[in-house]
Image 1 (cartoon, rainbow, N blue to C red):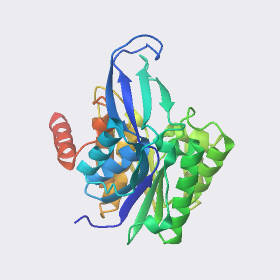
Image 2: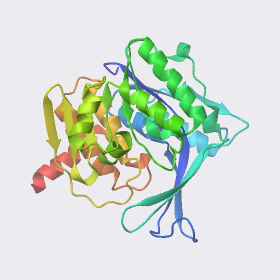
Image 3: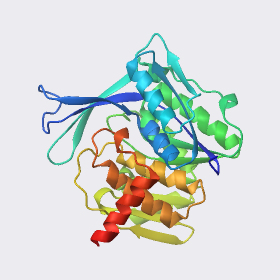
Amino acid sequence: MPSGPTIISAGELLVEFVSHRKGCGLEVVSEYSGPYPSGAPAIFIDQAARMGAATGFYGTVGDDGFGRSLVARLREDGVDTSGISTDPDRTTGTAFVSYYEDGSRTFIFHLKDTAAEAISFSAEDLPDGELILHVSAASLGAPKLRNVIVQAVEAVLARGGRISCDPNARPELMRDDAARQALQEIVEQSWCLMPSTSDLGYLFPGLGEAAAIERMLSAKAEIIALKRGAEGATLISQGQRFDIAPHKVEELDPTGAGDGFCGTFVGLLAQGVSLEEAGRRANAAGAIAVTRRGPMEGNSSPEEIDAFLAAENTRA
């Protein structure tokens, strides 16, 4: 049985189609592959489960092949899917993504009026015992998802649980003041924050990196994991600081790498792994993720992370 608190998350469940041709901008005929299981909080919870943590998810899919593939993947990887419902009247959410030569990307999300928005949650649904609720800010741009996530945050805090947050502030998903306000409030209540460097400017405009970190630590955060992408990561907690070196890999598809980092990090912390070791392994998981096409396809097992780190040490 997994040890430690149960990690839960709630939000969008969708499948993703990825263009194999760079620079097409979703505007011209191209070859795509998919449907890949996706959704930022779903990628996170799947990776946390792979790390051996007790996990559960709340969301909704359609009564279709896309939805069945999502639930099957999560269940197969050890996530408790009893909080996932099926809406027979709506289809499962979808997304399409295309990359440019400089590594930037463009998305089209089909979430409005899909099953993803039919999510429901009640405090009575929470599992027994100690809880960690993970929030991906990418979910807060959709009003119906945002309302449920805010309810879940309040319920978990009322139970004495903790909040982890990836301030994954995608401009294409967070276009209104309500989303920004919800994110700010959740950031201020989070025990563990895992922003990317690009998130800092969104959260703390005009502040430098050191001042932004100090601002986060002055609230409720006890742990900061700053994701630096190809430059590695920085971990800060209770006077400790660890700068984790990057890994040189061939990037194929970066979507979901940050979610995989966060899932590894929180999943291991929940089981008593040290800050430095959890960060080291999370950094490796993020590097593995970008080498595989498909957001959840990039998730990795402890054995795969062991092999990756061993190979790195051999090359060094």
